[in-house]
Length: 312
Image (tube, rainbow, N blue to C red):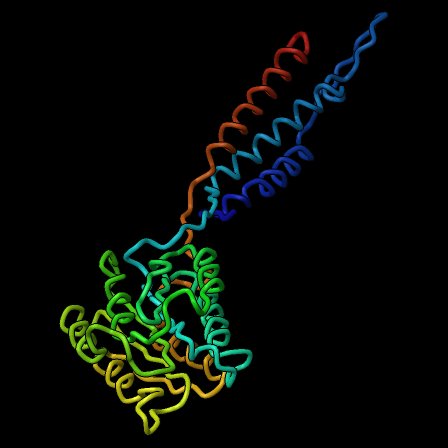
């Protein structure tokens, strides 16, 4: 809870000090009674002390209400805020190789999960591809669900092959309903395109024509360069795809470098939203105001009706 006008809280201790000083200077007129009467001090009775306690409690609550207390409630970012990101993950058979411990796919998934945890205010989605692409999760703020999809992404979910162009096209299509002006594709691959109906370069050019500067593509190269027989990682194509769409190619040779890739993307695509979350604040002074007024009324009724001294 926070207070918009904190100095109002100081009114209560100041009032106590003033009442104390005035009561010391106040002279009480004494009266002498004769006869068989016994008078008890009303101000010293338990009921009167209760009434005074209620009165001061009511004053305290009114001072709190005057300070305008507010409560903060965390809210999710709206669709037009933050950055929309789609991780496009290669799940072809070659991702099962163990040159990255425990495998290329496991290392890529672990780095992706770390990346997601560091961007709580961005919508992130997941596309996997092998012989053909599949959207497992559109961009969402529900990162817990997204993480489950990443953990469940396994080899064999799709027929083996490497459709980089098709995977990139499906990822770009995933932004059709995006309202933010900042969109990012992180394309992870360890091979050359072998099964896309349209080659990746043509897809990259189409993306640049349609989305322009609003969509960046970062490519992550895992594995070895093209061999003599034409099989292996096509870094040249991945580099062209990234440069054409405002991103860059990351050459990764170890699991540790995968984490560094996501850290670099984090800095290049820093979210404009605060890391601590977004909060809306609502006034909650009404409770203190009403409670204070009720206690003041009860106190006055008790003091001037039930404990009134005859002759006042």
